[in-house]
Length: 259
Length: 342
Ligand code: HEM
Image (cartoon, rainbow over all chains, first blue to last red):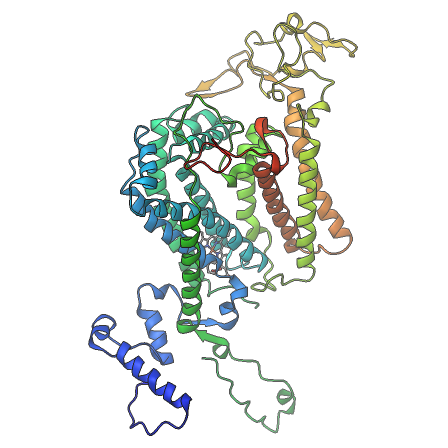
């Protein structure tokens, strides 16, 4: 749509608008700063649009083309994508929270309380982290229901469903380990319930409890374990599983469709 | 972009083929990811960002007082997505409610695609005939049944336990020989000292129960000893092995009463009610394939999960008693204090 031919006199307001639009497009996407970053203008032909998806490191998670039924909002309600988006938001806000949080029973509570009072946007970051964490748990369940009721787990996608189940577990476990970190009454007593549940496992209860909580009650060993799991081990594992999940969607021939 | 092309004129020697519309080619049904999909993703990401920004500006994450192991909140509750397990704990053996059933649930989810191998009608919402109504019925059924069971099993001591009242529970008060009123249903494994080997001690503890049918087998008195039947070999080398923290049955006793109240009754009830709904739906012809059975079980399990979560979240007060949501007190431990607090 780059304006190349000599513009005649505009005959009506649509044409005027078109001219304005083209000028704007040129200004925005054909200037030398834009070109220095993206090497080409805004992709406005099918060819360049497919290229941009295939060559961009973030967009190439997608195929270049997709069946029209899958673009309909009502097919996926974007649930898987939004779960992933929540994961990204949680990573960003979580990193910011880590700047202020020391996983020690002495200081943890003060650190969180300081987020409320002393740290600029600290409370906002904490709130965002908290609410998106809840949202992720809800979304992952809804996503699973979407996949189930559209029968999208059937061959050849069986294994990706299993990968999904591990992601469901990881999401719950991530949220659970994060719950202890504020070290307030809510945290410690909620985790105490979980502690009791873990201890009730037949035969391996005591051992399991000890491995997970570092002792038979909830103290510093439990806090450091939960912290490490929460900020390092589980997110890493979840990210790996998500990579496998997305890879398998592509390998299994895109999303499920009636045969 | 999908472009409708005109159907080529049918060759005259094949008139039959011309009568049918030519099926669309794959390519024509496809859209470009950029812009069609990327646009949708972008908009939904923006909407979510805005929503959560607003939410976070107006609603603060809870922060109560500093953790204090001396002050136990009543009730203390797990994170909301585990409240269903906590609710289950009130109704059956801890190991089942907290560990075995959840693992079975995840395991069931994982094997669904290996049980239901049919592939017709995939990728469409409620693709097969009746699947929508099966899901609806299963959801309603699970909600009603779960609520029913929760109400039935409510009270000081669970109803399942009442059903086993004819055999004494193992929570005996040492002085009176009566079950301790506050104590939660009997334990599966009787760990009381003095119960090693073939039991005799119970006679001193309890005295003969009044008005019950009594007899003895070997050195066991029935029904007084029903809650601590020794396992075979529990007092010799064969049963009494141990490796690190893992023990064989060393001095352990089988609690018939506890097993009934805590395991056999609750679990068989769940199993029976599941089979019942599948059977009914099968008889009226709605459930016909493995896929349909999966829909019933998946929907039922999720609905029960949700119902239990709701019960524990909104209907359990101090002492985990059932109360109405309106009777749940405002928690005054939060920072800043909610309205209605000193
Ligand atoms: C952290 C958790 C998860 C993330 C980030 C995630 C992400 C995604 C995304 C982005 C898609 C593309 C389609 C869509 O948006 O619906 C997808 C598809 C899929 N997901 Fe997930 N997912 C997660 C958890 C799960 C769970 C718990 C299950 C099942 C138990 C599951 C099973 C599947 C399957 C089978 C597909 C293919 C669907 C189709 O072919 O239509 N995923 N997932």
